[in-house]
View 1 (spheres, rainbow, N blue to C red):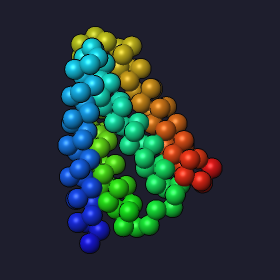
View 2 (cartoon, one colour):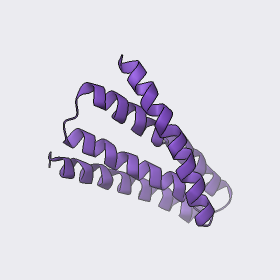
View 3 (cartoon, rainbow, N blue to C red):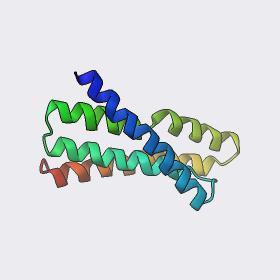
View 4 (tube, helix red, strand yellow):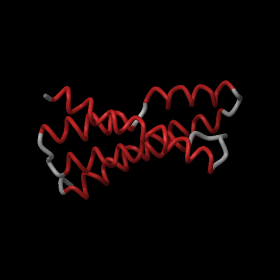
Length: 118
């Protein structure tokens, strides 16, 4: 049953990631991967919130592993960072790495705090 819940959550999270990324990239200059940054931070916050609320196993499978896992993307983050490096935008690549890690951790902490664990 958990595998089905994960699949259902991912079926919603992955298309949402794509739509958010496209919308953000249309609005902002494509010189920085803002779409990926935003979905990764949002997913970190949501997963922290779910953990803070002590969501049950079914909810964590569907919303945590499934939806948040489908929404966030480490592979695209890595790819876009390498593309920044290859194009000579080393500072933007460094900002992407440092900013993504810092913002993701802060968002997860904020979700935990809002959910009641901290």
